[in-house]
Length: 610
Image (cartoon, rainbow, N blue to C red; front, side, top):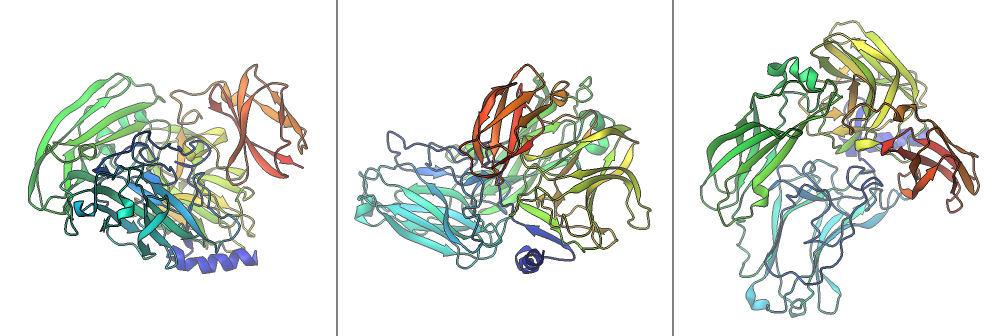
């Protein structure tokens, strides 16, 4: 306990602490790197690329484009960069290809961390006189944690003899606007048929993630050190949520107050990389995906863009919304925003598609955590969080989804409760507890990176405001419980915390806690799961030495996965009732077992290997 307390005090420097709430690194990236979505290991192309080489990471998938890059260690995303050049950045951090810190035992280790290596590029027909330059934009920290002075972002070029030449490096520094770098290719040993360039970051694990973002990479001939224009008009950022405040909600709750829940307009920033004014047409379309019903077409507008600047552009929101949708069904509106191409610039970054999902939960977060959130707890008092939500018509809550940030040591045994309040003791209002589910512990292996906790009963609530959050018991047994934090929304007043007997409003961001509305079922399936929640299973003996036997209440074949306490998938396979599963190869310790029946995740269980 003393060591943990010292860590929290020292951590304040890195987490910009105020009051009793703190932020910490994720220590794990389940969205793109974990066992549920292992990084793709690309192969070298059979034929080398030719100049020009270009990538601005505008693709939708979280791994790098395999046509351009070899490794899949970096994280391609739209949330870690602050005002990127174009939408999408490559994020370098201190997490390996499995989403786990590169060193889990030495907090002070300085490691060679993420790499991003180009596919081979044929420079054999070029020479130093062709003025070949590599350019890119970089940003330290972004929406993550600052890389320290001993950390760095490095660029290497590959020589003809397969050795790597270091050509540029930047030491760690606090967040700054994206900065462009141009590096000439001059050494004659670099002009060969299998040339490659590589980005790599050195990261001190310490207590932060050491974030670097890279954007708009270009390698081309006939350039010079003043060739800073990118000659591209592109969508650089967008926040086109169809909803006014929520990011997700059930469709029937939306229909109960369409005008109040629908945003009046959405905004996308457009970047003009040219050195002169550019006039560009923009518009958007929308459709309901399941039926392919058009909801809106047109909305054309024209923007005159200032050179080398981002300019916000507003899009009106359509008012079409189909009736007759199932009460707890999955509904998706595809909203596509696009620019008119200027004919010569890249076109992939001219379009942005946002799917507005309506389903069985309420949320303010966008589904991606940039940091973790935790409370510094007084040992004699419980620590509480409460997020304000509202219903437009009476409904029930069947459970809650929580995105937990991993921590070292793991927080598996940090018991907590989930509470629903009609009101909290804030601004003179009395605290009115509606329901409390006790003796829960944080779990990490579940759909969409959230773990789904089913309540013992459906909790009815009237229309209007309510709060839902966590309670960590007193006496320090569950202190520093890490909850995923979406930092993209810091101007809200929905999140509250209480560590001293008084409720305070947080300005950190949005805690990733989602109440599940109506019948309990995970939100990645289109309808309630009637059978999966009734399936029971166990493994015996437990503790085990060589084998465990599966006892399954259904006459089905299940898919099992065994994870260590760092979330790494060590073994997977199939088994039916009565089948034995070997655990001989596992080291002594505690493991989590995830079982899928008909593709549906059941309750995660633990086994002990002796």
